[in-house]
View 1: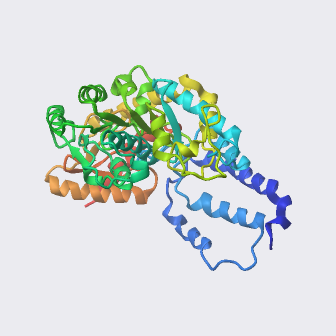
View 2: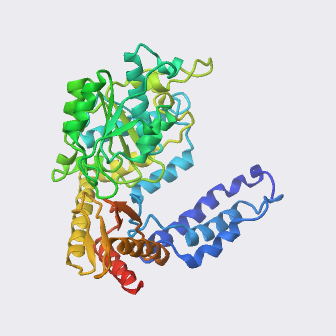
View 3: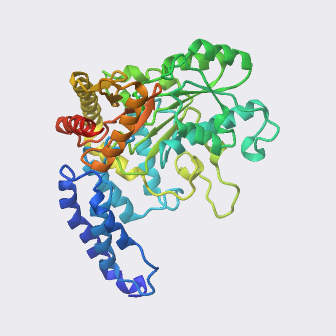
Length: 474
């Protein structure tokens, strides 16, 4: 086969191949191993030298489907509890297919008024969903890491301005180190954002009152007062090991008292705002100067999806506007160039799956999902409490449960080794997928429940498989 122009009539048929494979694959997710070690040899079919003459559109797509549906990690299924990974709702998945079909250039208004308008709409819906003021600026990003970067870039510009410097034009040279304060819950993605911004990942001053990372507000305030100038606070809405939260409202009080910038990293925890039973966990987020979250976690839209919101919209353009170029259009409030509000210049129309899922299920559908997952976390906590060979290491969080396997007669060091081996075996087994962490100095499991498909039987299977593997390990 040669030039794709010769195969243009195959485009629709290639998409039908994918559509025909989708039904059986999605229907099988509840029964598949999350990751099947026996499927690993399929990956060899991907290898080899670059073809001189291609196999053609249909043959290529058939082979990709054959290998992918067999060898992929089936993280869209209901038993993937590793990291904090959602699936894709039916509407979001279809919306993502529309994104690929239309292939919009979403960064500039003239290249796609459609993509820009959809992004504006979904940002408004998300602010409404999370209880953020409508006046906040916003932009969609590929992840919470880049959403954190967006918020912290705006904070860096604000901070440098108070030192009389336009950091976008002149850089950080001559400025003191940016003071950044957080609890022990600060996530590596915030540190990575600071690293990329040239502020240094070790800029963060951590104030913890215990080995879990809970914030020491008194110590933080004392250092904040001693700085005597502008600073940045990072509050963490949803800690990954046990699902705990910083007291966002208390951080907001400190920021207001000392004239600091408050950034909230709400990668998954921001979704607590959707339910009256959990909204107290993010009380005060509406007072933040910037907020970051993921869509491909609890919104259950496909990777890559994140969003950033900034109290003063102009800060985003100050941090990310493109250098002067005659061919680039100048946007305005009605014709927004989103590539000037965030780190990406070339952007896909990632608003489409968000629009589809919010339009399909609305506020109530997403609230119901959050509450169901919270109930499942409580169920998992109850099953751990009842099992004689399992030990909770923290109360069930919003949607994360931290526990370990235990056996009488083993000290903590040997229990750590046992749980490390159990975690490795669990991933190799493939029936459920949950990784290990270190929490308060102890090796533990920390399954996170965020997939819209997950139900009680999946939680019960998780507990059963953990106990089974633990019992057979020496």
